[in-house]
Amino acid sequence: MQIVEAPDEFQRVIESMRLKDKSVGFVPTMGYLHDGHMALVKRSRQENDITAASIFVNPTQFNVSGDLTNYPRDLGRDLDLLENCGADFVFVPSVESIYETDTQNSVVHRVNISVSNINSVFEGAHRPGHFDGVALIILKLFNLVGRCRAYFGLKDYQQVLLIIQLVKELFIPVEVVRCQTVRQSDGLAMSSRNARLNDHQLSLATVLYRSMFDALRLIESGTVRIDALKERITSQISKIEEINLEYVDVVTEGTLETPEFAEGPVRILIAAKLGDVRLIDNLGSEEIFGNEKAMQSAGVAGLKG
Image (tube, rainbow, N blue to C red; front, side, top):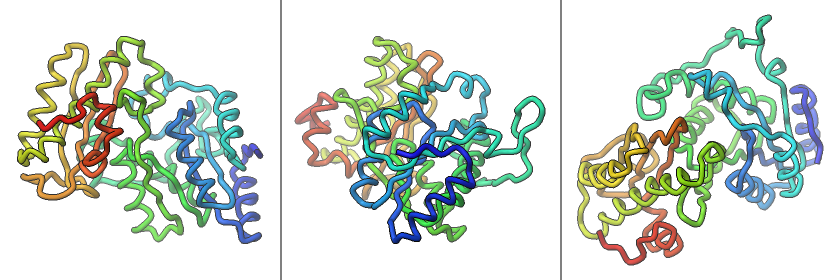
Protein backbone atom coordinates (compact mmCIF):
# COMPACT_ATOMS: atom_id res chain seq x y z
CA MET A 1 0.00 0.00 0.00
CA GLN A 2 1.37 3.37 -1.03
CA ILE A 3 0.75 6.42 1.19
CA VAL A 4 0.65 9.74 -0.67
CA GLU A 5 0.59 13.16 0.99
CA ALA A 6 0.98 15.69 -1.84
CA PRO A 7 -2.11 16.35 -4.00
CA ASP A 8 -0.15 16.58 -7.26
CA GLU A 9 1.60 13.27 -6.57
CA PHE A 10 -1.72 11.59 -5.76
CA GLN A 11 -3.18 12.88 -9.00
CA ARG A 12 -0.15 11.64 -10.92
CA VAL A 13 -0.05 8.11 -9.48
CA ILE A 14 -3.78 7.53 -9.99
CA GLU A 15 -3.58 8.79 -13.56
CA SER A 16 -0.64 6.44 -14.16
CA MET A 17 -2.89 3.53 -13.18
CA ARG A 18 -5.56 4.60 -15.68
CA LEU A 19 -2.91 4.85 -18.41
CA LYS A 20 -2.27 1.15 -17.73
CA ASP A 21 -6.00 0.52 -18.35
CA LYS A 22 -6.65 -0.03 -14.65
CA SER A 23 -10.11 0.81 -13.34
CA VAL A 24 -10.08 2.93 -10.18
CA GLY A 25 -12.29 2.79 -7.10
CA PHE A 26 -12.17 5.62 -4.59
CA VAL A 27 -13.27 5.70 -0.93
CA PRO A 28 -13.06 9.19 0.62
CA THR A 29 -13.10 9.20 4.44
CA MET A 30 -12.44 11.47 7.40
CA GLY A 31 -10.60 8.73 9.24
CA TYR A 32 -11.22 6.91 12.51
CA LEU A 33 -12.29 4.03 10.34
CA HIS A 34 -14.74 1.27 11.24
CA ASP A 35 -16.36 -1.74 9.58
CA GLY A 36 -18.58 0.54 7.50
CA HIS A 37 -15.55 2.07 5.82
CA MET A 38 -13.98 -1.35 5.37
CA ALA A 39 -17.13 -2.56 3.60
CA LEU A 40 -16.70 0.28 1.09
CA VAL A 41 -13.06 -0.65 0.49
CA LYS A 42 -13.93 -4.32 0.06
CA ARG A 43 -16.66 -3.54 -2.46
CA SER A 44 -14.31 -1.26 -4.37
CA ARG A 45 -11.73 -4.02 -4.54
CA GLN A 46 -14.36 -6.40 -5.93
CA GLU A 47 -15.38 -3.99 -8.67
CA ASN A 48 -12.10 -2.28 -9.64
CA ASP A 49 -8.47 -3.05 -10.43
CA ILE A 50 -7.15 -0.36 -8.10
CA THR A 51 -8.64 0.99 -4.85
CA ALA A 52 -7.61 4.36 -3.42
CA ALA A 53 -8.83 5.85 -0.14
CA SER A 54 -8.36 9.26 1.39
CA ILE A 55 -8.16 10.31 5.03
CA PHE A 56 -8.84 13.99 5.58
CA VAL A 57 -10.79 15.70 8.36
CA ASN A 58 -12.29 18.49 6.31
CA PRO A 59 -12.49 21.74 8.31
CA THR A 60 -14.90 23.51 5.95
CA GLN A 61 -17.79 21.17 6.71
CA PHE A 62 -17.76 21.75 10.48
CA ASN A 63 -20.00 24.64 11.48
CA VAL A 64 -19.21 24.16 15.19
CA SER A 65 -15.51 24.49 16.02
CA GLY A 66 -15.79 22.10 18.96
CA ASP A 67 -16.94 19.31 16.64
CA LEU A 68 -13.79 19.69 14.56
CA THR A 69 -11.59 19.68 17.65
CA ASN A 70 -13.34 16.66 19.16
CA TYR A 71 -13.49 14.59 15.99
CA PRO A 72 -11.66 11.31 16.78
CA ARG A 73 -8.39 10.66 15.00
CA ASP A 74 -6.00 7.70 14.87
CA LEU A 75 -4.02 7.76 11.64
CA GLY A 76 -1.77 4.81 12.47
CA ARG A 77 -4.75 2.56 13.20
CA ASP A 78 -6.53 3.76 10.06
CA LEU A 79 -3.56 2.98 7.85
CA ASP A 80 -3.23 -0.51 9.33
CA LEU A 81 -6.92 -1.19 8.67
CA LEU A 82 -6.68 -0.01 5.07
CA GLU A 83 -3.57 -2.05 4.39
CA ASN A 84 -5.12 -5.17 5.90
CA CYS A 85 -8.23 -4.58 3.80
CA GLY A 86 -6.22 -4.39 0.59
CA ALA A 87 -6.26 -0.69 -0.33
CA ASP A 88 -3.61 0.15 -2.93
CA PHE A 89 -3.20 3.89 -2.31
CA VAL A 90 -4.09 6.17 0.60
CA PHE A 91 -4.15 9.92 0.19
CA VAL A 92 -3.34 11.68 3.49
CA PRO A 93 -3.01 15.41 2.75
CA SER A 94 -2.47 18.25 5.20
CA VAL A 95 -5.00 21.05 5.51
CA GLU A 96 -2.42 23.43 4.04
CA SER A 97 -2.05 21.32 0.91
CA ILE A 98 -5.81 21.29 0.27
CA TYR A 99 -6.76 24.85 1.28
CA GLU A 100 -5.03 28.18 1.43
CA THR A 101 -4.53 29.10 5.10
CA ASP A 102 -3.61 32.24 7.00
CA THR A 103 -0.95 32.70 9.68
CA GLN A 104 -3.29 31.14 12.29
CA ASN A 105 -3.80 28.06 10.07
CA SER A 106 -7.40 29.06 9.43
CA VAL A 107 -8.80 28.28 6.00
CA VAL A 108 -8.94 31.26 3.64
CA HIS A 109 -12.04 31.01 1.46
CA ARG A 110 -11.02 32.09 -2.05
CA VAL A 111 -13.50 29.77 -3.76
CA ASN A 112 -16.87 28.80 -2.34
CA ILE A 113 -19.55 26.43 -3.54
CA SER A 114 -23.17 27.10 -2.62
CA VAL A 115 -25.68 24.25 -2.59
CA SER A 116 -28.53 26.34 -1.25
CA ASN A 117 -31.30 23.89 -2.12
CA ILE A 118 -29.95 21.11 0.09
CA ASN A 119 -28.82 23.50 2.83
CA SER A 120 -32.42 24.39 3.67
CA VAL A 121 -33.62 21.03 4.99
CA PHE A 122 -32.66 18.39 7.54
CA GLU A 123 -28.87 18.30 8.04
CA GLY A 124 -28.47 21.44 5.96
CA ALA A 125 -30.89 23.38 8.14
CA HIS A 126 -29.33 22.14 11.40
CA ARG A 127 -25.72 22.58 10.25
CA PRO A 128 -25.55 25.85 8.28
CA GLY A 129 -22.85 25.75 5.61
CA HIS A 130 -22.06 22.09 6.20
CA PHE A 131 -22.97 20.89 2.73
CA ASP A 132 -21.16 23.79 1.06
CA GLY A 133 -18.03 22.46 2.74
CA VAL A 134 -18.83 18.89 1.73
CA ALA A 135 -19.36 19.91 -1.89
CA LEU A 136 -16.09 21.84 -1.95
CA ILE A 137 -13.91 19.01 -0.62
CA ILE A 138 -15.62 16.38 -2.78
CA LEU A 139 -15.05 18.49 -5.88
CA LYS A 140 -11.37 18.89 -4.95
CA LEU A 141 -10.94 15.16 -4.36
CA PHE A 142 -12.79 14.16 -7.53
CA ASN A 143 -10.61 16.56 -9.54
CA LEU A 144 -7.53 14.84 -8.14
CA VAL A 145 -8.76 11.27 -8.63
CA GLY A 146 -10.35 11.75 -12.04
CA ARG A 147 -12.51 9.10 -13.69
CA CYS A 148 -13.43 6.47 -11.12
CA ARG A 149 -16.13 4.78 -9.10
CA ALA A 150 -16.58 6.50 -5.73
CA TYR A 151 -18.13 4.61 -2.81
CA PHE A 152 -20.33 6.21 -0.15
CA GLY A 153 -22.35 4.73 2.69
CA LEU A 154 -26.03 5.60 2.91
CA LYS A 155 -25.81 6.50 6.59
CA ASP A 156 -25.08 10.02 5.32
CA TYR A 157 -28.10 9.84 3.03
CA GLN A 158 -28.47 13.56 2.36
CA GLN A 159 -24.77 13.81 1.59
CA VAL A 160 -25.01 10.99 -0.94
CA LEU A 161 -27.89 12.73 -2.72
CA LEU A 162 -25.83 15.93 -2.79
CA ILE A 163 -22.83 14.17 -4.33
CA ILE A 164 -24.99 12.51 -6.97
CA GLN A 165 -26.43 15.92 -7.84
CA LEU A 166 -22.97 17.51 -7.90
CA VAL A 167 -21.61 14.87 -10.27
CA LYS A 168 -24.62 15.17 -12.58
CA GLU A 169 -24.77 18.96 -12.77
CA LEU A 170 -21.01 19.54 -13.12
CA PHE A 171 -20.44 16.63 -15.56
CA ILE A 172 -17.84 15.04 -13.29
CA PRO A 173 -16.59 11.68 -14.69
CA VAL A 174 -17.31 9.78 -11.49
CA GLU A 175 -19.80 6.97 -10.90
CA VAL A 176 -21.26 7.34 -7.40
CA VAL A 177 -21.88 3.94 -5.82
CA ARG A 178 -24.42 3.90 -2.98
CA CYS A 179 -23.67 1.31 -0.29
CA GLN A 180 -26.00 0.15 2.47
CA THR A 181 -25.34 1.30 6.03
CA VAL A 182 -23.28 -1.17 8.04
CA ARG A 183 -24.76 -1.80 11.48
CA GLN A 184 -23.79 -3.46 14.71
CA SER A 185 -25.66 -6.62 15.71
CA ASP A 186 -28.07 -4.47 17.76
CA GLY A 187 -28.86 -2.26 14.76
CA LEU A 188 -26.81 0.80 15.73
CA ALA A 189 -25.28 2.36 12.62
CA MET A 190 -21.50 2.27 12.49
CA SER A 191 -20.11 5.79 12.98
CA SER A 192 -16.80 7.34 13.97
CA ARG A 193 -18.77 9.41 16.50
CA ASN A 194 -19.80 6.25 18.36
CA ALA A 195 -16.33 6.22 19.89
CA ARG A 196 -17.38 9.21 22.01
CA LEU A 197 -20.29 7.31 23.61
CA ASN A 198 -19.95 5.23 26.78
CA ASP A 199 -21.45 1.75 27.06
CA HIS A 200 -24.70 3.03 28.56
CA GLN A 201 -25.12 5.61 25.82
CA LEU A 202 -24.37 3.05 23.12
CA SER A 203 -27.18 0.92 24.48
CA LEU A 204 -29.59 3.86 24.52
CA ALA A 205 -28.67 4.88 20.97
CA THR A 206 -30.10 1.67 19.55
CA VAL A 207 -33.59 3.15 19.98
CA LEU A 208 -33.00 5.22 16.83
CA TYR A 209 -32.85 2.14 14.63
CA ARG A 210 -35.52 0.21 16.51
CA SER A 211 -38.00 3.08 16.34
CA MET A 212 -37.45 3.57 12.60
CA PHE A 213 -37.80 -0.15 11.97
CA ASP A 214 -40.96 -0.33 14.06
CA ALA A 215 -42.49 2.60 12.16
CA LEU A 216 -41.71 1.16 8.74
CA ARG A 217 -43.28 -2.17 9.70
CA LEU A 218 -46.54 -0.27 10.20
CA ILE A 219 -46.72 0.07 6.42
CA GLU A 220 -47.30 -3.67 6.16
CA SER A 221 -50.26 -3.41 8.53
CA GLY A 222 -51.84 -0.65 6.46
CA THR A 223 -50.77 2.45 8.35
CA VAL A 224 -49.42 4.61 5.57
CA ARG A 225 -49.89 8.22 6.69
CA ILE A 226 -46.49 9.85 7.07
CA ASP A 227 -47.52 11.79 10.17
CA ALA A 228 -48.50 8.50 11.84
CA LEU A 229 -45.05 7.04 11.13
CA LYS A 230 -43.35 10.13 12.53
CA GLU A 231 -45.55 10.09 15.63
CA ARG A 232 -44.70 6.43 16.26
CA ILE A 233 -40.96 7.19 16.17
CA THR A 234 -41.20 10.34 18.29
CA SER A 235 -43.24 8.60 20.98
CA GLN A 236 -40.65 5.83 21.35
CA ILE A 237 -37.61 8.08 21.47
CA SER A 238 -39.23 10.59 23.86
CA LYS A 239 -39.34 7.86 26.52
CA ILE A 240 -35.55 8.15 26.86
CA GLU A 241 -34.76 11.42 28.64
CA GLU A 242 -31.08 11.35 27.71
CA ILE A 243 -31.86 11.60 23.99
CA ASN A 244 -32.78 14.95 22.45
CA LEU A 245 -34.51 14.37 19.13
CA GLU A 246 -33.60 17.11 16.62
CA TYR A 247 -35.73 15.98 13.72
CA VAL A 248 -37.47 12.97 12.25
CA ASP A 249 -39.08 12.88 8.82
CA VAL A 250 -40.06 10.45 6.11
CA VAL A 251 -39.15 11.17 2.49
CA THR A 252 -39.78 9.52 -0.83
CA GLU A 253 -36.82 7.25 -1.61
CA GLY A 254 -34.21 9.02 -3.74
CA THR A 255 -35.45 12.49 -2.81
CA LEU A 256 -35.77 14.82 0.17
CA GLU A 257 -39.48 15.40 -0.43
CA THR A 258 -42.02 14.46 2.23
CA PRO A 259 -45.18 12.84 0.87
CA GLU A 260 -48.50 12.71 2.69
CA PHE A 261 -48.79 8.94 2.34
CA ALA A 262 -46.24 6.13 2.07
CA GLU A 263 -47.49 4.93 -1.30
CA GLY A 264 -44.10 3.75 -2.54
CA PRO A 265 -40.57 3.24 -1.20
CA VAL A 266 -39.81 5.73 1.59
CA ARG A 267 -36.88 6.49 3.85
CA ILE A 268 -36.92 7.75 7.42
CA LEU A 269 -34.35 10.40 8.32
CA ILE A 270 -33.46 11.06 11.94
CA ALA A 271 -31.03 13.15 13.99
CA ALA A 272 -30.62 13.29 17.76
CA LYS A 273 -28.15 14.29 20.45
CA LEU A 274 -27.03 11.93 23.15
CA GLY A 275 -24.93 13.82 25.65
CA ASP A 276 -22.72 16.05 23.52
CA VAL A 277 -22.63 13.58 20.60
CA ARG A 278 -24.85 14.20 17.61
CA LEU A 279 -26.07 11.07 15.83
CA ILE A 280 -27.78 10.71 12.46
CA ASP A 281 -29.33 7.65 10.87
CA ASN A 282 -31.84 6.66 8.22
CA LEU A 283 -33.68 3.57 7.12
CA GLY A 284 -35.45 2.75 3.88
CA SER A 285 -38.57 0.62 3.61
CA GLU A 286 -36.98 -1.53 0.90
CA GLU A 287 -34.12 -2.40 3.27
CA ILE A 288 -36.30 -4.17 5.82
CA PHE A 289 -39.25 -5.87 4.14
CA GLY A 290 -38.40 -9.54 3.89
CA ASN A 291 -35.02 -8.96 5.58
CA GLU A 292 -34.93 -11.39 8.51
CA LYS A 293 -31.47 -10.22 9.58
CA ALA A 294 -32.76 -6.65 9.91
CA MET A 295 -35.74 -7.90 11.92
CA GLN A 296 -33.49 -9.76 14.32
CA SER A 297 -31.24 -6.71 14.74
CA ALA A 298 -34.26 -4.61 15.70
CA GLY A 299 -35.38 -7.20 18.19
CA VAL A 300 -38.86 -7.16 16.68
CA ALA A 301 -38.94 -10.32 14.56
CA GLY A 302 -42.49 -10.96 13.48
CA LEU A 303 -43.69 -7.51 14.51
CA LYS A 304 -46.76 -6.42 12.59
CA GLY A 305 -47.18 -2.97 14.08
